[in-house]
Length: 96
Image 1 (cartoon, rainbow, N blue to C red):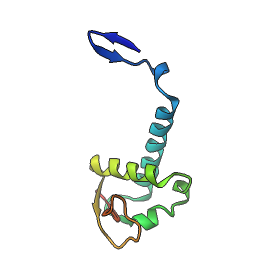
Image 2: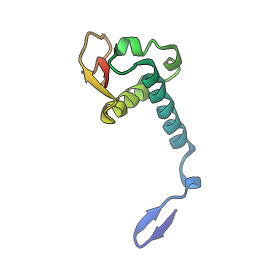
Image 3: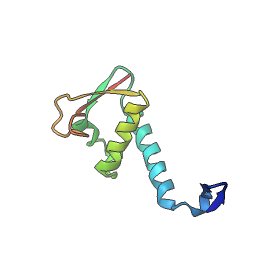
């Protein structure tokens, strides 16, 4: 870590490799989801967690990826009819 004028700068070698691994996982998950749900289509969270390519990821990182995609305005969210919901109310993803 280097301090310049009160600002801390971390070099990549000083950052935990877990941060890069999680960022890479999020990137991969988001790409899988975008490839599975084409514009105009929708999918429940129940259906999403059954996708074979996503089953090795934790629900926490799946939820984070879904929230990122909603924040990035790739998807709209609704309660839907899903038994499983992210954040207590996201049960359906609708691709923009």
